[in-house]
Image (cartoon, rainbow, N blue to C red; front, side, top):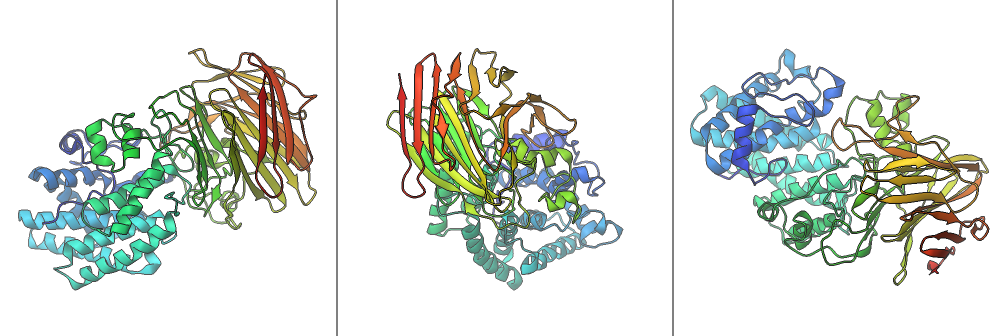
Length: 608
């Protein structure tokens, strides 16, 4: 019999202890209630706030570690409890009856794909163990055929996002397992493989980046692809090479503290592993290095990385040594589709000197369902929970917000990639340019200028071609370690460890807002979400100005005292030529940048 396909969720490391823990203490997911597998499983969706939990229950995520552990250790009690739960589900949702419509997730696209390979293994293993009655065997086979027929129909497959990918993975695994027993299953295997090539080409850009705007989904989809390869479902050398390219790309999205960048629908996830665990999980030297803190493998490289097709800038300190003190900056600059897309165009995060300084909002969770044609629905929201709505909003990210509105996502054509030009000056700053349009005629260009370990400048220029005056707010969100105070049109950020950052405008015309911290009225502001259904307080601030055309240049400096030189600093109306000057304890600084309409960036930096 074929071993269990570990495609999602279960880790090869610690299977026995994890399985026994679920048997003894029940299965838990995030902050949701623990489910005892010896009691009735809560299949019914009773509250819209439990949509994510109900999806995972109907995907049989609670059975995943048990099936994987049984495949390895053949402890029959693990298989029997899985069998009892599978029969209960099949009686309700295959045989039908009054329970068949108590949830939308029994036959939800992605849940069907995940459940297909789990049900396939369970039936195969139970037959081998000879623990099925004739009626039970018939019921489970009927259920498996129902999954086969569902997945056979193109109309049921979510070709446009990662849900379809998991559907195809389940179809391939199920088809291979029973292909010698059923011609329909053999056909399903062939069809699944054909679909897999199409979906991988659609979901991953040539540079290895997942196109759904979320590094954690990049990780999750990659792990399933790796599972397909490890379990022998896929042996194509081209796909194997592609999987390694995808894993190497993922390594760039790991911050120096071994946390995954949480853009879009990503949680604040640690990739840290002990060497033995890392070797079981990763295949490339780059991810081995990142996950073990440099104990294994080699780093992904340093300097500025442009993901031209995926739509990201990432700067990493070029040092070859692993250190939590390294500089790291990542910017998202793409709109491929609405899938997992927040209203976060050109947002970024910044890590330096061992601290997360400017952070992202995270995802919070998929809670509540937006009513069609409602205000939220028209604004591009799939989910209605106010905390989820906040985490998707423009004001929850390090973005330039216009007229207190979210960047449009529904009813607009995705622009693809918004990367512009970039430049790394020898022993000097790194410059990253990006540009996109919002609300039809409104142009927005952003220039991030970073001197690692010393300062960051965020330059934003906007112009409305329709001559409408815009109220612009340049938002920034600080990590939890930072405490902020407001001065005269400036801010000071400090940590208990003694770190200090001064935040000042370098161009006249920007007005510093009050500070926001864990606010709920009149709207949420000053929060971020590390994981499912969690919001935590953090400081947020913005600089404000209004006009048809405007420019912001905000300096974040690791200096005790900063004095902007407004008399010498200037920017032209087009935003293409700027000079920024300021003084601090290191001396005087003069930065000049030319952004011609065509050609390369030109920059010079003097410090004296």
